[in-house]
Image (cartoon, rainbow, N blue to C red; front, top):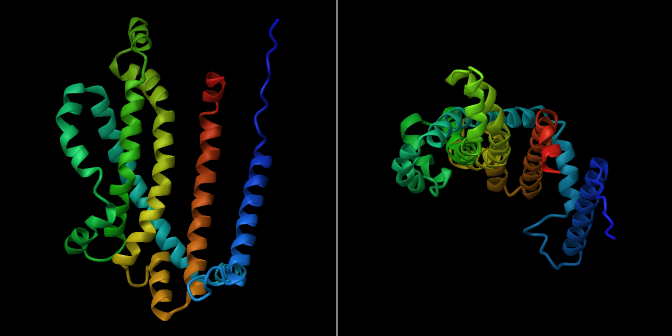
Length: 266
């Protein structure tokens, strides 16, 4: 006689609570390490002071202008990466010969860090949002591209043939079979690319400042030059909070739009 064990998924509220608790424990331990001298305060201020400075900065209009500048580069770069990645991924996923011919250039360009092309973008486009957005797009392209290719190749050929037998033309098969099947894979690529895009958006602001649109990276550069460690670390915390918010929004959209996938996986 066998007994089946039902597994109950962890409630979302519980998962969030555990995450907050773990973060609080980490901050407390880090605070203790700095206060006891285990970590020198010359290189890392007290986390409590950093959090207090973070709260102050969130009420400063200039900081929100810099946040918007960073998010502008992030959004434009992610949009360009999405358009190119999905279009190219659909082509490479559909035609094996094209995928084989492009394998060399793709494998050559993929390991190249986005910050490595910053000098090239600087010489071609100058400083500003456009060059930063293109650097972000380059970094965000690869997760979207490869997830789109995988999604295209996961389409069931039998489903496509069945759709054709019901009188659907190539466009109908594309819109009713191929795109619905590949969309969850593409969105997963976008979610992964979103985190990478935010990291690169802040990083390239160190190298490609945009004057008034300095972004969060510009704040870090100026604070480091002035020896203001509190502002520097507080800006890093704000960037991390942006990452949490953007990922939470994308996860919520994924559960809302592609919730049916969980039923199929069980």
